Image 1 (cartoon, rainbow, N blue to C red):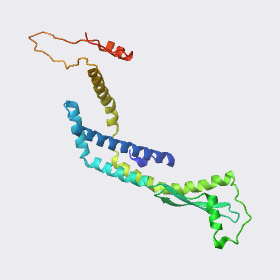
Image 2 (image 1 turned 180 degrees about the vertical axis):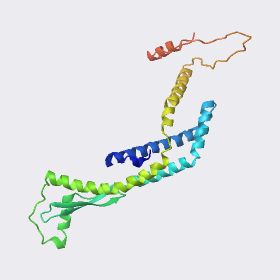
Image 3 (image 1 turned 90 degrees about the vertical axis):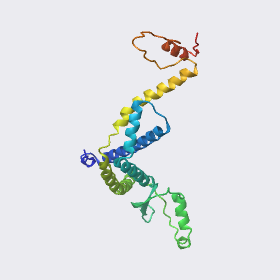
Length: 246
């Protein structure tokens, strides 16, 4: 399904859907890249992990993945550059706000004096020294505040809409990417990671651990050494008791 087919949803919901999909693909690309790097750092002997390493390496070299990484990096850079917006407020003779508009979108955070300080600095200039208005700065009514905010939101929406269209068109290039692959891998990877940690915990206690081997059928013999009750040992560890070999 193409992303632009979500036209029945509200504009706000559609925008959140687009950014949610972007963050999903961004996390997917980062995870694939990190898994690839880890596989290059460790020596693997597991058949399954060797196969996974090959699949990840093939994916990394694909044109689709390269395009995805380039898109994510470029779009993230554009979004991160937006640090503030400049809003212009027109005042009447009594310094009451009359109208408001979005002036610009900036790549730097805005730092300035308070509104009162700025007005005072303006009136201290020579051309305003004889213009001492007796009017006070009035508190806006709730209706007027809501109206001004609505105008600002409209301007922001006009800025965001082209961005959303660009994002939608770009994301449609990657509809074939299914991030569920990583979701399915998570429980498998967690199992191996936790088992590896458990193995090192057992070895730190000097408890014997080995890989079983199958003897020839003709021998029909079984040799077992250093047998202990694994579940009992875990309960002892929970109670703070260190298991000892006899």
